[in-house]
Each structure stands twice: as structure tokens, then as C-alpha cells.
Amino acid sequence: MHCIGIDLGTTNSLVSYWDDVEGKVKLIPNEFGETLTPSVVGFTKDHEILVGKAAKEMLVSDPERTFREFKRDMGTETKYRAGMKSYLPEELSSFVLRQLKEDAEKYFKEPVEEAVISVPAYFTDKQRCATRLAGQLAGLKVKRIINEPSAAALAYHVDKMADHAIYLISDFGGGTLDISIVEVFDNIVEIRAVAGDNKLGGKDFNDAITELFCEQNGLNKKKLSAEQLELLYKEAEDFKILLSEQDEVEKTIDFEKKQLRLHLTTAQLKKQASFVFRRMLEPIQKAVTMSEFSIADIDQVILVGGSSKMPLVQEFMESVFKGKVKIDKNPDEIVALGVGTAVGIKERKIGIKDMLLSDICPFSLGTAVSDGSFSVHIEKNAILPYSKTRYYTTVRDDQTSISFPIYQGENLIAEANELLTKIDIEIPAKPAGKVQVMVTFSYDINGIFDIDIQCMDNDVKVHKSMMAGNMGMSEEEVTERKEELNRLKLKNDMQMKSNYLLYRANRMYQEAGEKVKGIIAEETKKYRYFQEKEVDPKLRRESIVKFTMLLDMLENDKETINADSFFDDNKDLQ
Ligand code: ADP
Ligand code: MG
Image (tube, rainbow, N blue to C red):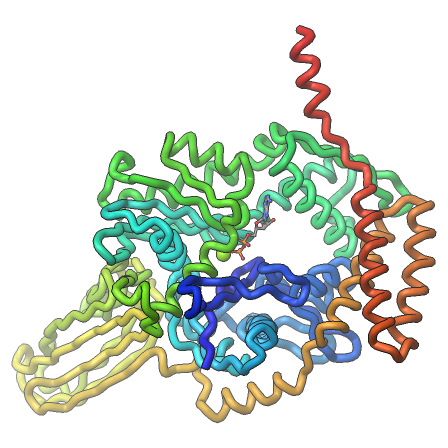
């Protein structure tokens, strides 16, 4: 039976596995032959579901029925409304997982039932539970939840096998920044500290660029429709990605019967998005301080996540860690490669069987004591698995029970932290200070949190396991919900591609000049006719290929001006 590794990202998700024959980790491509599947889910009018690239295109024409970045709301009750139905973040995530599972099944030509999924290091217990539930809803048994930076460290370590090294891993994705300090020695990968900002990512650059486009063209952002904003936003992201290859981008688009001139240079972006870089410093500082290493101790800085492809980001990190920055060609694939490696470790596959992976507790766990202060059992950043026992005595005479509220958080006042649960235990009535209760907290590497409370005087024991919670749903409720979601069908391969092309053509039509508009309209009509009326699947497939080629050609033809060489020539003249 196959077990897959999943990087369930805010922006993009990937699926990997451990290849036994070659003894290495591999990524599984989606139906577009790409390793990155956008974490976007769209509900079509015919009540079917689009996931990934097709759904991302759908954002422009149908933003009301298309959802993204729901990972930010994992573990909350946020409802996403699509028509008459509404979905929770873990339910939307389950569609992404189902798509990845199906892609893997097509790849293996066999069913896939198990998965290891990664989450940001600072995900709370609730968010981890929601992720696990998303897996269950997609029909996957989630064998392990691992931290994204741990996975990244693992991927890197397997390649390098350095004797002893201290790494700083900076994972800069679409919506989150994770900084972690990892020590490697012998065959052990140990996370020393993590810090992060889960509201900072590539999206902030897109926002900043959209802002700039509005300024450049005297548009009031607040007056734009959701569709128009999506269009500008998509342009902004394209500009940003082009700027990773060149220093200046310029383009004119048709926008509400007006011509918009969009122009961006690296220098402008650096200025417009300077707040992003300023905010990056904080988690870096925090992680280094918490690890108790100095910057000089760090051997190498490894950049992962899609935003690490930006030269500005690389330049910024280089300015902080001079000469230590390492950047992979595909930094956005590293976490998934690490999760696949973790699958190999879990299954004790030869080659990496000796490697150990430890993790850290992403937050402090404890209980409240009588004066309301927070009695911490497991400190944030404690190395997992971790277990600690503390003893408490009664403060009042003839007390017959003690109540232990269990919190997670970093505040000294217990109540200011997040209440996880409350456990009561019966005790014999005795004078204050005469009854002793033993409280043991255990937190394992899978994020399962066990609490054992035992009264030493009457031998009453209470046990609670926090992972078993399923977000408050019973086993039956999970099964029921799973079946309900399963009735909603994911579009099949051909439909997905066909839909993707229609949305893409539609978006290109909105941006195009008169002449190209004519071509797109004409060709779309022909294409639709084929997709809807043609009975021979071979001919339908052919029309997909032809239409793709046409759109590619039109898109490559679009006006993109790169003024690099001009400025270089000028320099020579001076
Ligand atoms: P996440 O971990 O949040 O799911 P990724 O690591 O895949 O996301 O990063 C996605 C982000 O990376 C997006 O904001 C995207 O715009 C950005 N990105 C991807 N490729 C490039 C590139 N070549 N240049 C600049 N940014 C890029
Ligand atoms: Mg990521």
C-alpha cells in the first residue's frame, strides 16, 4: 500500500513519495504535468469542484465561488459560502487533498490510503487536528503531521549528510514566513527553535504591486469590482515573477474601456514593499535568540518557499547572513521532498533507516494554579517527544474535587491563553495541603497531547488525549460528513483541462486589445463547440491541444518590455 507525503500549502500544495527502487524521494505531477497544485477550490454552477490551476483561473471570472488561502483559517469556524452551501476550512482543504490523492493514484495506478502531511511549525493543536480531519475527509489515514521546517531540514540533510552543522531555514511562501534553526549531528536532525509570521508572504508583494498599479493609473482600489481586482492582482503576480528574471517589466492592458499602463522595476518594488523586509527581521531575530546560538554559529542559511525565488529576498537574506545563504533552483519543492523523506523514514526504508527526526513543541502547555497564574508543564520549543510530571496539593480544607483547566500559550496569566480543555478529578476530603495530585503532560512527535491526572490518596486516575478530539466531531459524524463531501465530484482530467482553458481564455479576453479579442472570441466559440458537441474523445483532446497552443502563442506575444540592455548600453557610453 502506498503512503504519500503532502505539503498542504497556503498557496500551493505538492505530493511526494519515497521511491523504494531508486532509494530516493520523488514528486508526483498533477494532470498538467506540474509539481505545484494551487491550493484553490472552485465550485462550478453544475455543482462540481475544480481544484488547482483551473480553479485559480476561475478566480478571475467567478471570485464569489472560488476560494483560496483557507489554510489561514484552519481550526476556526469560518464558513465559506458557495451558492446555497457553505464549507469549513478543513472541508475546502479536503478537496485539495482529494485531488492530490487522485493524482497519486493515477500515477501509481493503485489506491492510496495513507499520508504524512506537513503544517507550519506554529500551528496550534486545533489547527493540527483540523489538518488531520481534512485528511480523513479526503479518505486518507494521516499517519503523521510534521512541521514544514523540519521537513525542509530533512530534505536538505539527506542530500548533504554533513557531519555537524547548524542551519537556519527560512521558508517564505505565499502567505507565511517560517524561520527555524536546526542542528544536525550524526544521523539526528534536531529543531532548536522556530519563529514565524503567518501573515507575511509573497501575497504581500502582489498586494503592494496592485497598489502601485492603481496609483500609476489613478484608480481607486475601493471602487473596483472583485473581478477587476483579481485581474490586477493576477497581473501583479505575473510582474513579480517576471522581475525574478529581469529588472523591469512594462505592459499595457485593456481595462474597462481604458488602457492601463503597468510598469514595475526592481527598485520600485523594493521601495513599495520595504515593509515586508522590515517585518522579516523580527522572526529571524526571535529564532536566533531562542536557539541560543549566535549568527556566527550558523553554518548555512537555506532559503525555501516560492518567494525565496525573488532576487530581492535573496539579497535581503544575504545582507543579514553574509556569505552563508544557499538557494535551491526550486525552493518551493523542498518541503514536499522532506515530507516524502519522512514517509521513507516512517516506513523504515533502507538508506535512511538510521535517521532520527526530532521536533519541538510549538507553544507552551500548562494549567492554571489557584492565584490564576500559568503553571507551564511543557515549555515552547521543548524537544519532542516530551513528558513532564508535576505535583499539586489542595489549597482548601475538605475539597472533594480539583479542576485543571489546560491552556496553550505564552501568557503568564493562565486565562489569557487558549483553553484547550478542563479536567476534574475527585479527591478525598482532607485538610488543605494534605491531598496530593500528580499531573503528567506528554506531547509526542505526532502532535498528540496526553494528559494523565492521578490522585495519590485515592488512586483515582483521569486520562485525556487531545488528538482524539476530531475537532469535536464523533467518528460517525466524520464518516457522515466524508460521505456527504464525496457526493460532490471533482471534475475529471479532461474536464479540468477544458475548464482551465475556458477560464484562461476568458481572462485573456478581458485583458486583450481589440484585434486579439476578436481572435480569442472566435477560437473560443470553435473550442466550446468541440468540447460540447464532439463525441470522439480523440478529437476533443486534439482541440484541447490546439487551443492551448493558440493561447500560449497569444500570451507569449504580449507586450513585455525589458529595458536592461538599453541601460547597460548607456552605461558604456558614459
Ligand atoms: P505556500 O508555502 O504558501 O503554499 P509557495 O512556497 O509555493 O507557497 O510560494 C508561493 C509564493 O511564491 C507565491 O506568492 C508566488 O507568487 C511566489 N513565487 C513563485 N514563484 C516565484 C518567482 N519565480 N518569483 C517570485 N515569486 C514567486
Ligand atoms: Mg510552503
